[in-house]
Image (cartoon, rainbow, N blue to C red; front, top):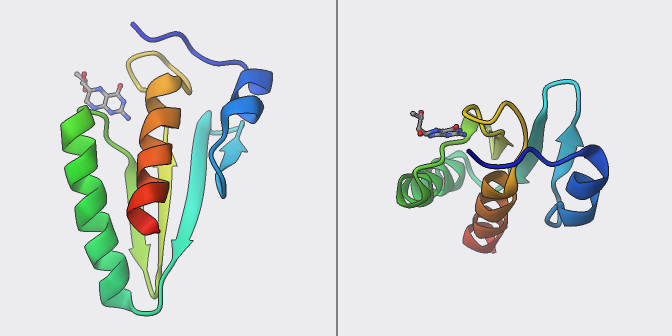
Length: 94
Ligand SMILES: C[C@H](O)[C@H](O)[C@H]1CNC2=NC(N)=NC(=O)C2=N1
């Protein structure tokens, strides 16, 4: 079982561009793209990273943007698994 991070810990460890949605107990980022299909491609790549980590985000693919939300359901909140995958998603989007 991963340890749930508290608000201060999340704030200290949030990767660039991510926000803490405390009400939803999630971290989130909306990635922006020049085309819809670039967003779709990002989501596909994100799915691969999720499978590698066996840790799966919620993703909403819209016109030229993809909103990604992460929490650790097994732990009931945000954990290091979410932070780690968020960092890898930032690298994917670079
Ligand atoms: C049984 C449980 O669903 C699995 O251990 C994995 C699958 N992917 C997951 N993804 C996320 N975001 N949180 C989890 O707790 C989680 N658990």
